Length: 439
Image 1 (cartoon, rainbow, N blue to C red):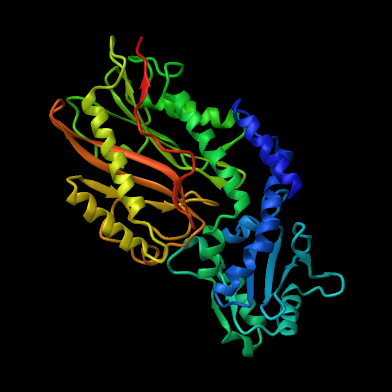
Image 2: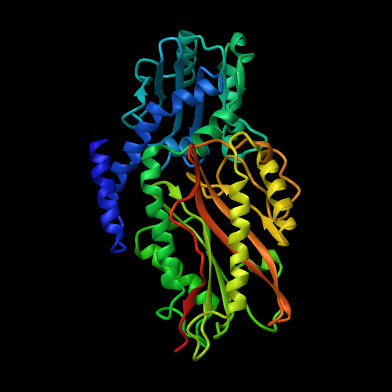
């Protein structure tokens, strides 16, 4: 813990000068967070799911998405066949974390197989099961979440061939457990998450500046690839290819797919253009997802036209409506329906497609709409909102501009935390258009 606090302090200091932690310090942070979650989060998740054994099986380069989040920082992939077993004894309040693998798996997971003494890996696993005699054994299978459906057919078939008959009727889906592990943020993670969002926004602000954009010359694809290169130069990664799009006077509004698609050549950016970007990074095993908007000033302008400023505020208004409808125990579909109804009653034209954010960009948890599912999302939209979770508050609202004689779309996305104290943005939110000088 002490080491982690020092590293977090270093992260905050380095971030002010747009520097990123060296790999060795990153590994310290990742491992400290992981060890803390095994100790302080996983037992409660297993109790909540009423599971006393969780078995996760993967092979190298075909990792279960859950197992990938559990590997120590020095493991970039599973090795050969890696089997993790978590055995919970609620009566003694203990949790055994075991690895039926040829190699030790980090500090928190105990090696539980000696191949020299017992060459059969599956038999070693069965010995662990029989010794502990669990009543409910969770395996990662799920209809609603790909991230919780990581047990592949070959491993499943071989495991079932070895598993004694008496345990086969004790097998259950690990969906709730897997989703809980992926969606729940620890206090340690929340200490550093705002810094990741700040790094993301700093890159956007630099991309949407006269240092990068020369009106009449720079294309949207130039900006996209500048962002990709910036991320690489910082030693980070993007978890999706960014997009930059334009809305302007006398050009019809693009459909939703076109607005979020990359054009190989891009469009030339001119003064008077309204720009939008969709951009996110991966750092310290957490992900960001941010959409912001900018305006290219015309010669002589010092601020965006008032009609664009007022339109932008309507995007913030939809954000407020959505987050005010957050309530622990509500489903994503319920939050979506209530928010859309309220926004329409207030004269807005909203579209909401908010998703969980964390160990994956499009992560596991409750889904609050999709751009093509505004009447609710089967499966993941029925999942209930839990505390200590992070969401990409992603949405848009269409606004008719008399000055342009057409509709525009205010498209926003900000990372927000839902916890015991309610909702809060991780690093504020955009409330004014970013201004790009044309002179």
